[in-house]
Image (tube, rainbow, N blue to C red; front, top):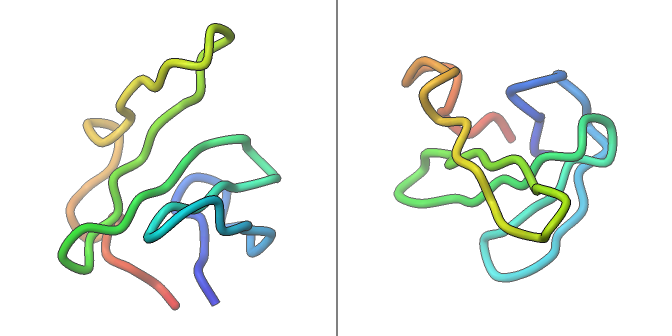
Length: 63
């Protein structure tokens, strides 16, 4: 089970191939080479990267 690096929640839904959404804190997670890229969904539907807020260790996949 995937764990959100932002809120440590487990209420994660799959929205595409290697793309997930946290229903607790409303961020989008994508998996690339066993690392997460983390994005905030803006009001207009665009994505803003949040990767700079997390360390490499925090972005490692925690199944």
